[in-house]
Length: 226
Image (cartoon, rainbow, N blue to C red):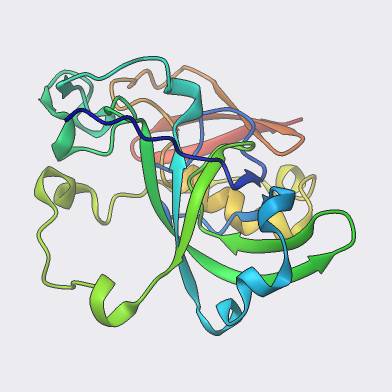
């Protein structure tokens, strides 16, 4: 029997990623701070009792910007240059049957606020600002961590990172607490993998700032921050 199921949005995430370009390709790669704000039906303190004893959480969410794109049995992973097809279930592509995402984040604080009730402060999210969240679950290291696991074609990019050069005069425009996360995002190489034009100036938004940069010989140079 082909049953239909409905998922209810329980929260939205808010952070400095206001567009897709520049969001880390996986969770945990940049310590960008995010706030998870719950719908009123789920923001009561008793629903979070004991959560502060955990260090990490799983987030189940939707690729809301791609939700109408539909299922694709094969996709072109950006890390493979966009010119090699892999099965969608061998990737974390958004073009999935239900457009669901799964991310592990670090829980920093559980706040009680007058306006929104319970709010979670997390770092390491790879979600765009405003992304709907369907559920959260505690991360259990003794069952969720598998150091011996194989990572398929993604294994080649485990230690991938660019060297980032940013003049202090530019970096100081950004609030101090946001500087290190920004550098982590840039080191992860925000460019599409098929872009190799050394003279091209790229732009990405980070909070209220627009960051301009170029890449040559595995070195990313920030040329302007506005």
